[in-house]
Amino acid sequence: MQPLLYDELVPWYRLVDPPRDHAPEVASFVAAMERAARRPLETALELGAGAGHNAVHMKRHFRCTLADISAPMLALSRELNPECEHVRGDMRTLRLDRVFDAVLVHDAIMYMTSELDLAAAVRTAFVHTAPGGVAVFAPDVYRETFRDHTELLSEDEGSRSIRAIEWMWDPDPSDDTFVTEYAFVLRDTSTNEVRAVHDRHVEGLFARATWRSVLARAGYHVATFARPIDEEGAFDECFVCVRP
Image (cartoon, rainbow, N blue to C red):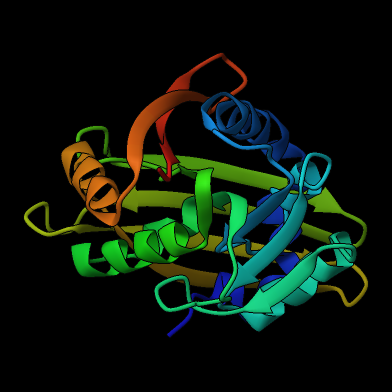
């Protein structure tokens, strides 16, 4: 069952995750790709592209193909990125029978909740990466860095306003998953409607060593780079991988 945020709450999605917030990290992705690649970078595939908020910034550098499992999210992306190709598919099984100079797998990778699923998604990225091309994998968190975390969200756009709590916690530290709970209060002044919605996301949680092993087994040469994660100058670590 798909989380509500990617289904019935899609009309509210841009308030939860504004496209402008993606600019600094996309700049770090592009810079890492350009440093690592062994071929010119002209085309890019994003697996789990969602509403296209990375593509808003990436399409300035590449001709982008955007893949996602959610049809409503792809429709939202088409509004922002009509010049990009959009493909519906599961990152574990998608096969386009062509390769790209660059591949990006952003936070949608967090929905791989077993090592088997993670390996399948990485394999999809690998078979779509051209020789000498590069792939970036950007998980939100690793087993070593996970902490219970709560964040408040507040955004207004036109007649719509959202207030929310995002709460990450781990019900069972012995397995490979954690949970992100969202408590949304949604107000639409055009209809004078206010409603509350709870949305639960079960996500994968793997050690850095597991990530490195899965990426290397797929055939990549694996390195890391720093990604900015907030306005205070904090960074985390993402993977940049070259296909020989």
